[in-house]
Amino acid sequence: MRAVRYLLAGCLALISCAHEVVRQPAALTPTTVAASSSDIEILQDVVITLDSGYSRQLTRGSRWMQVGTLPQGNVYRIVGGVFTVEGANVHEAWFVIAGAELVGFYLPVEKAFVHLSARVRLEFKTASP
Image 1 (cartoon, rainbow, N blue to C red):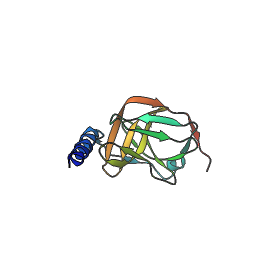
Image 2 (cartoon, one colour):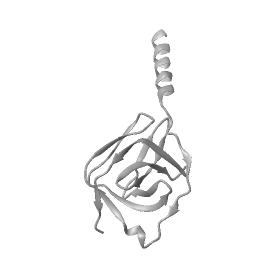
Image 3 (cartoon, rainbow, N blue to C red):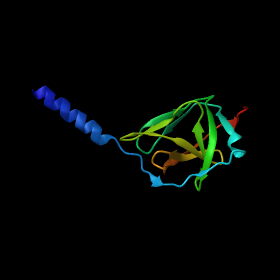
Image 4 (cartoon, one colour):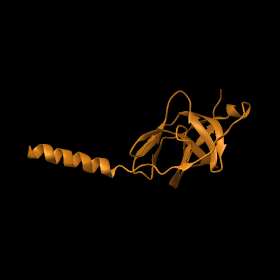
């Protein structure tokens, strides 16, 4: 019985350590059809550590399609899959690039922006159709 209590206490401690991603409301301006052909391809694996403490990897060779803009930068969605970020919950995420730096993520379900404290320099090229 004592072991079960310790196990439950440990689980509760782990759950309470999970930090939620900090979101701010964001209004995505969709990209026009003509501009939506601006796919990019990631040229190297990149590990991103979110402010929540969780890490995610952008995989070399993955393709991302521009779907809109925010005041923070251009918004890209992964092609042929779903990319997620994690805090206390898991969220579908599209990345936001300003210049050649990943500055955060747009969460389409929540219609929110998640800022990265540490910007991440990305190596990418325009992908061929």
